Every structure is written in structure tokens, then in C-alpha cells.
Image (cartoon, rainbow, N blue to C red):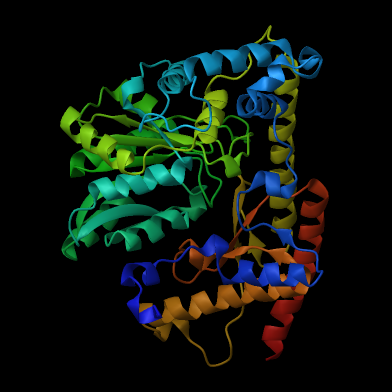
Length: 476
């Protein structure tokens, strides 16, 4: 029998907070009949976001093409849906049940290149676009490609999405934390990047890449073009590749802000020496098709011999699932004005993004009214990283602790808070320690994906819980 001592030590060190112990406890409570408001993960359709009609109609016909030839099919499916499904089958006659090329179906990769060109106004090479099972698979591909020595290091933002910290452990690499500036809308600071990399080099780490999440997870911040240019110049100075996690590019809510891709800024700067890996996914945005596990990775500034190794790596896994590839295609090539499906598609898309914007405002405003809590109203993405204050127990002086002792102390405090919040209110959020936070601060991450009535309920319950929790600590 395999024992825990036999398990890969790298796996034992890896943690993935958004599906950790608190979520397991929430599932236990739900099985006991208690209502849970799940705010732990960006899983839109699990939280009652409806699938886009156009996407599901196309998939229905591709999974069972005989439907197109049934009497009355033209009364069930719009004409452009049937035309599109037939076109896809002509270009991929093997259908959804056959393996594809390792890099993905060629016409889909060409469509994504067209999507990038339309989004950014820059050229894109479909031969440097790879279809992946969600953005996560693309990130793992890059870690496999680049991690070569035990002291190879990856710069990751703090707070970060725990995919990155977990992958660093799994691949036996080293973590280089750079802190985002909470007092400046979670922006990136060049001096902080320099501090971070200098400290890493002093500790014997060889930095190989920097990861940037834009719009931010868990912060909801949207980077400026100036910030992105700064990161590109920093990467060139230090010989780093860039991992640009851009899965929330459609989720920008704040007035006056817009999404800028790393590819566009890099093109405008004329940068041809920094390797860029850009990731996008059908799980986020307004599609919310998490279960279909579709996405793509675009690579820029990579020699042909290195790219051949990427293709070899993908070949080992055969190919991304075909339905995920198809949904990625539909994201890149949606209905256009004049198409029969366009009006409904635009209406559904607008309703989803408008609802998310409204809920971001409700959540941010409501939590900021709670004494001892503060949060930037999310500018983008699907999350808020909420700061909260708790009194220390009598006789405890965190300043007297070693860094390791303080980290353990603060991790226990935010984890206990989130567990008690769950058990007392049914609200499931993730402790800030699962994403990383500055010493001396406590946070939790929450989504604003649940229905509006649940967000309103969450704000009310959170206020009552926090006041009561703090009062009990003061009495102790």
C-alpha cells in the first residue's frame, strides 16, 4: 500500500487554497442541508450564470450533426448557427471524437490569430498559437519548458493566484515574491521588482521568468499601459521570459480603464528579444465555460528549435479536448452584426458583464462600510481582495516574532476567521494567506459571481459576523 511518506515531496509541499480545507468544510455543511454562498472560486455557471445560447447551440450540432438534417431543425436553430456548424465540420471532418493536431485544430488557431489582430491592431502568427485545456495547462507547459535547475526562480505577484505558487513547488523551482502596492490600487512598482530580484540573486536563485496577472486575481486591478511597458523593460534588463495571464481581459468595469495586452505593448516597443507567453481562457470573461476547459497560449520571440520542443511537449499529451478547442474558437469568432444570432448574443453578453459590474460595486461599497474592513472596488476580473483588522490576543507581540513565526501566526488567524465565517454565515471565502499578503496584514478573497440577492445577503451577514467576531476577541 502506498503511504504518505511515499508520495512525491514536491506534491506534498504544493497548496491550492481556492479548493482547500474551508471549501471541503463548506461541502460537508451543504450535504447537511445548510445554504452555502460559494465565493471561493471563479466558476460562473456553478453560480447560476447562464451559458450563451450561441455557444451551446453550436456545440449541440457538432456533437450530434444529424440534428441539422432533422425536419424542423431550421425552426430550432438560427440559420447562422447551422451554417457555422457545417463549416466547422467541413474544416474538422473527424468531428469531436477524434484527436486533433497536438497544437490544436489549424483553422481555430488561424481564427485566434485574427482575434488578436482585431483586438490589438498588430500581426499575429497562428503558428505560434497553441490550444490548451484552459489557461492552467498552458502555464504548466511553460513551467515544464523553463524549469531546468533546482535554483531556477519565478517572480510572482503577491497576492497571486495559487496556481503559480503550487506549480513552482510541483516543478521543484524557487519562488520570488514581488509585492503589489495595495495603497495604489494594487499597482506594480519598478523599485519593488528590482528589490525582489536582487534579494533572490543574493539567495542563490537564478530568475528565469516573471508572471503577471492582468486584470488581477485576486486583486481585481487593471494594469496601465505604462505599467506593462515597465515590466517588459525590466524583463529585458534581467533576461526574463514573461508569463502574461490575461484571462480576465473582457472583465474591465471601472470607467476610464481599458485592457492592454502585453503583446500589443511589446509590439509597440519594438521588443524582439523578450520571450512572451500570453494566456487566455473560455472559463472567464462573459462565457464562463469552465467545464469545457478551453484556452490558448500565444508565444512571441521564440527560436524555431525551442518552439519545436514545445510542440513535442504538447504531443506527449496528444491534444487539448476538442470541445474546449471549439468553444475557444467561438470566443475568438463570435456572431457578427447581420448574423441571425448576433442580437441575442450581444444582449446576453451585455447582461452578464453589466451584472458583474453592478455586483462589484455593491460588494465594494458594502464591505467598505464595515468598520475594520477595506477593499478597492474591483476594477476588473471577478474578485475582491478584502483587508480586515483583528485585535491581537493579550500578551502577543507580532513584532517580536521571527518572520516564520509571524507567517504561521497570521496564517492561523485568517484561516480561523474564514472558517468561523463559513460556519456562522454559510459564506465561503478564501484566506488571504492562500494568495500571499504583506506581513502584518490580513485578507480574504471573495468573488462577486453569485446572484445579486446573494451578494446583498453576503454584505449584511458579513457585517454582523465581523462585529461579533471582533467583540469576542476583545473580551478574551
